[in-house]
Image (cartoon, rainbow, N blue to C red; front, side):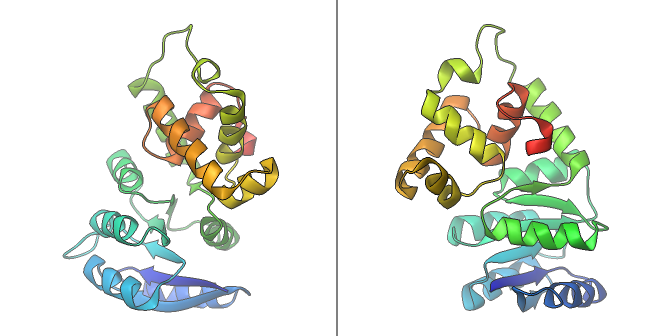
Length: 218
């Protein structure tokens, strides 16, 4: 059972999300919070698998709460669900450790799949936001034409990056490549360092840029 905590300052939104999530087998809403500080308290008490996080809230906002949760509770994954698709919100959420970013109005089936995928270690990003993230990586980290990920990563690291970019968790990558999860974690850390990126989403976008995967695989 995937345990979900909803964090949104709108009561009617929380009630609607709770009804949607509870209707899906394998998902359970274990609590609701209406601001970032309350979300931290609920995470500490309830130990959810996934926090469904809004961003603009009174007091501690969703960006601050996401950072505190991902730093203090690394086993809890945060899926942002918000009305704010502006670049600065998307980038700040990803930098703060969010595991995915969706906009309110996302179809029910997409949202439910995203919650399940987030719990399994996958990354789900709104298509329009993903396009802007890709554009930012392209503009902010230009590489000389003669240097690509193929030059800086070993063959095994490319294998790991390819699966990471497809949304597989460390456990799934380990199973697919017959490696231990510890070895996969080490490979992922090395990949992020070599590519000079801070998270899996940016690494996946570079994998797309240099042709290790295509858009349909992410």
